[in-house]
View 1 (cartoon, rainbow, N blue to C red):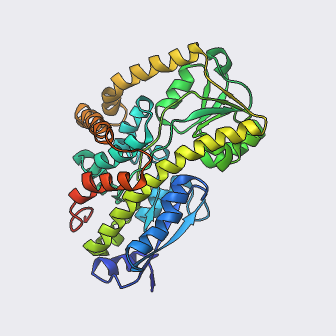
View 2 (view 1 turned 90 degrees about the vertical axis):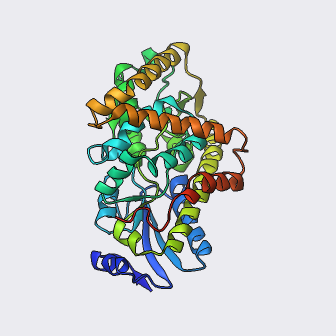
Length: 373
């Protein structure tokens, strides 16, 4: 059995040394209760072993014991881990293309559509593929959060109530919106939301309502406002070290592709259930759940319309994309494509979603050449 921790080991694999049992390290910095770790890594690891008949054996780490959120990309590049989740909003200068399309996160609200469309785009768009190659990462699938809502220590239902509030954001367009609305954006990892709210360095956190339970935010955020402040999808759910990936056989890569397809379906379904459970648990614990007042809704709608229109300009001026309009147009077209593909699919059927992802994405990818740099 091999544990692949060094560049020497990766080089051995690249020379064709992958064995009948390949042990490798997989990391997600989220706690195992969060679907991106639970379904996306813990259960994904079991699925990989099952699909490969014990040929591929991931050793899964969750939480920040191995890598901090901002260190995930470097960990992949340095072969500290062979595959990891990386949220590109934490490293915008390293992944400008991924962050440019994340600017459209305010414009969409369906995580099922997003998770598959983002994967399709990220594995086929030439500009995005070049970025993965330049940054020494092999992209094999997306994550997509539910719409982020406001979880606060005091009520935030109107524009007046948001003024002066220190609100945890994860970069991207939501930070601009918070500032324009009169709040103070604070860009810290989601792992720091609880302590920030507990100590009073944060007044609110924007994240999925599932975190009311998964991260125990209901203990420190008694006021949740169901205002969608966008979704997140930037960066790979599974980003592989290129040396490790090159050393795998085409059949092994196909197993990992199938595991990605099913695990994406599982993630979005788990998130939907957890969001509802989080809201119910918060109310049961004495918390309040509000609908936003009209002035706050109108403010978000105006901002959403404006940022969507300006996305291409920002992709060029802020992120340095050479052909920004083409990039944004391709992303929007891919999202539209998946809206159509999902129209006739039961979005609660794990098998149907997996089959569609395999048919429309992974079966069209050449496992023998994809990501081999």
